[in-house]
Image (cartoon, rainbow, N blue to C red):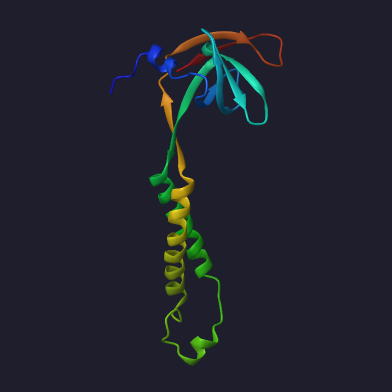
Length: 163
């Protein structure tokens, strides 16, 4: 599928958009909200600090939030619930009812207990995951660029190639 033109990509970086940014001006990955955008820079708010201005030429990767997916959240809840339930099913328990009637429901082997608690955990995890949801991120295509900038914390310059 052909990439959208850069102008269309940059048009999506409007104030109020949730973004994840990587680049030479950013240590690691910055996640926040676009506060403002000028012709050559972007100002992104951070949850635990002051806003950061980032030169567009220093950005190597941008992802835009497309909202929450309830379906993916339900799937994640199913996996977490089943996993936690399976682990809890391994915990040995003593039920006096099983001493009287070993054929009663829930008085089987540890594997049976594991399966039953995994099913129960997934039945709890699916609605919780659907309510919470999972944020969907879309990566913007960013053109190949070569840039020269001041090295942070050092005297000198750094040459960067971003693609």
